[in-house]
Picture 1: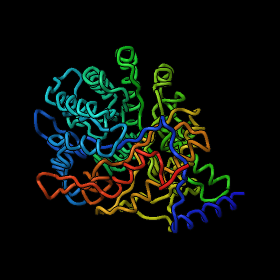
Picture 2 (picture 1 turned 120 degrees about the vertical axis):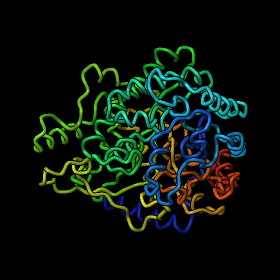
Picture 3 (picture 1 turned 90 degrees about the horizontal axis):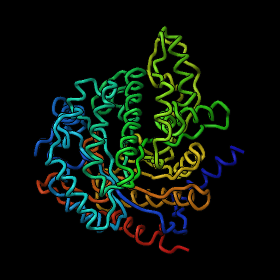
Picture 4 (picture 1 turned 120 degrees about the horizontal axis):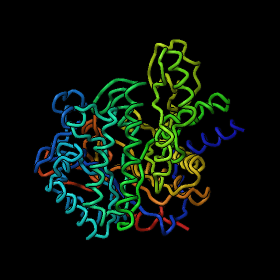
Length: 495
């Protein structure tokens, strides 16, 4: 049976290279389309109007070689000064909503609970939000997108449990100042990258390498901080503001490399160690059982007095469980997963050894400009079905999806990516009954792509970073996406 499915998928992939495989069905009327950016990647003005230093400011300035092209976000797209231009682009696209993030250090320069709030930062975001509202574009706001105030990093960053208190203070400031106009909130973007890449393997700021230890402490604090912010909203603001709060983890779709039981278990384990790591406590009350059992056992074998995976108290389990109003997912690509022999050397302490699977791309899958991203549209449909089944059929927001290239206005490969991925989204909705209600393209415009700098482009609009005015120019994909939004159709003619 599995072999038949594999051959069917392979045939479909080969066929899709010659012609579009997109469905000619239309998206439901309730479905909303948007685009996304993040504060450090687009705003610039890194030290203007009272903004404090964040961990990306600090890392890029003290270790410029961390970024491929030795660039930084000091100016980026200059959205701090050009936010009206950004909204004009959004208006031209016809999007229903704009997902953007707030800069913690722009709003609270020291980041600390009880420290002064920067009125200039409040004014900037109020002006942006009002510009969106004036143009009938709904704001979907991410409270934290990787840019921790440097002061808090000097306190130990997310592995320090005190961050929960500081984040709760920050969230309260945000809800109080913007909640009358903002109805949809995301507490954290891609916490896997914040913790695993930031504190485990050092691929993102602050660039620490303490895998199997610090990333678990980071996650423990971050999940409690999310729950705290949710309860702050629920208890102090929801009655008046009538909004919704979620979190946006990310994952690949992990496809078993074969039909063997061991490969299927390995693929499920990979999903639980990535998406489930963050979602399971919020939806079900605790870390996935496979994580708890494996890390407990390995910790004992390694001579630890207690598990390297911190434990929630019974009170914390109840406090965290149910702190969601929807399920959000950032999804870009797919990996094959193969079971491995269990590690014999228990001296190896790392997240990867705790997970213990092999992952790989199929060589036939189309490449992008990013080494971690291959084009695998069918993985999106499978992932949405897994999320729906695993978390009891929640409302799902796709909060990021997109593909990179090296630049150019005639970006047909991006058009094909959006067409094929959106087709799988639509089939998941209409044919499988998955409750997906929003789709967010990454990104509105080319921007600072973290450790890759400006070498990779994800935008619907090109930005000339060599011009001090940072002019924006629409790409072919912007025209295509705009037509999809207006027609709710992916091809020339729909049913």
